[in-house]
Image 1 (spheres, rainbow, N blue to C red):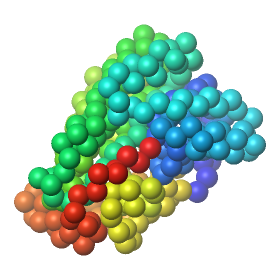
Image 2 (image 1 turned 30 degrees about the horizontal axis):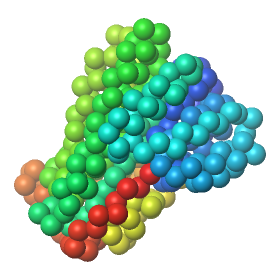
Image 3 (image 1 turned 60 degrees about the vertical axis):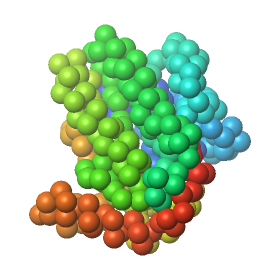
Length: 276
């Protein structure tokens, strides 16, 4: 799926010339980086794996006439988000895409507390630090955009992914609140809440993905929604799932998610859940 010429022009005019994309080495983060490059954005791409980032940089620069800087910094490590900000504070960034994520599956009581704290740091703390910093900068400039990667699991508790779903609920609520706060400053805030997406997440979280969207199916709908909505449910499967669950009470949604997750997850907790 491709961005239309009109959308490319709109995005660059409102949020160019440069975008920061965390979690850019795979999945939705990688797809969004590619689509932004196609619209003419220079990129700063962040993930843990430098080799992956360098390969993505080479691929993007072969296709598009843009500059790509790589920042191989693990944002799950305390203090590293501040290190990232220090390295890029001078860049003329107009859009921040917060797509780095960490997930595990199984019974929370059997998990490593160290793993869960690291997930909290990456999924929530690093997002808070970056969104707080760029909300201030963009408000002063009276332009800019912040894109949060939420999830369908943000809207109810999810057995066998209890803490991961809780981190996404935090992201969803943060994005909704900041969207209203920053409107008077002409800063766009969007929470993208996809359903199952094929990426490195499923295998690393010890999950078997059945029907799932590809990153290519959700990237364009997410960017099309930026500046127009505060939440988007990208992709046909996401919309189908949202429609199917919308009439259920919250407790009913939790029961459904329990059945879904018990079928997808090996309930022995996987502690290798870093996805970007």
